[in-house]
Image (cartoon, helix red, strand yellow):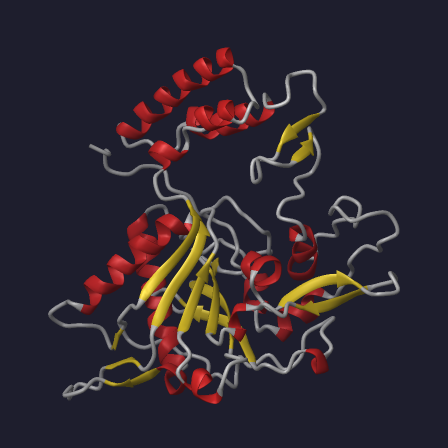
Length: 376
């Protein structure tokens, strides 16, 4: 396809950021939207790129490019940036009267590495489609991401690309290793995306950018729903349900697996299975339940989800949702996080998402998978 209009690194350089003291963070970083379809006005993915820091000058010169993807499908990689291993942390000020942008000294860009956080597929975080062409299967996700990555590498060619040895067609390839990393549904995204990229590299007429892959790291990956939905055995082993409950949930797990054998990934019995086990974990009369994210922690039944801690603060910062501090899990006396979200979006060159009606949330529903070919 023809090359869409692409930004330059200078266009997307983040020069300031609300709540961030520039003296606290001197690493250059870039953010904005990159086209993910041949119609450059429709689909765009949002990215945030951090230059390598730490290590020796030689380490930084040869630092790999590391892509981070959160899961869902439909959960923003801003979780990784603000809540897990990225450089920024939204925190109350020391005097307790306001908010500031704290710095994570263990941020992955200090490995050193170029770290690229991407909101994908469209409909996730700040990634948007004006024509509501949401992805509903792996092939659509892979096509969009491959085009985004090709466009991203082209836009940042001075950082990441070199000419292909012996090639007279102007094709380019990476000048450093590229790794994928992610969690949860990224355990499905990443192998599928890598397979697609390698296949594109091997085509008779390869793309304008050839993308060799060095490896991947997946944590807590949603790799095999057929078996991973089966939670009754481990829950029983932890003493959270009794034997009669285990027998009942085992039967529902078989129903779920039968639906997936038929190619149905949208089966209610599967989606409700873990919720039912969690709800039963402390007994029907209890006011608490085990956390679906951490089986060693308890949550109040009927309360707002507090995990991961801080996700409602990020929603306030990027989406202007107005979550009260108490409902975001903060102790009494912590003020509500109030910021000019329009100013934030301008700072990270993400106002197109707002214009397209894409309001940031940690996880959203539009990107989802209904069916796939039968398992066997």
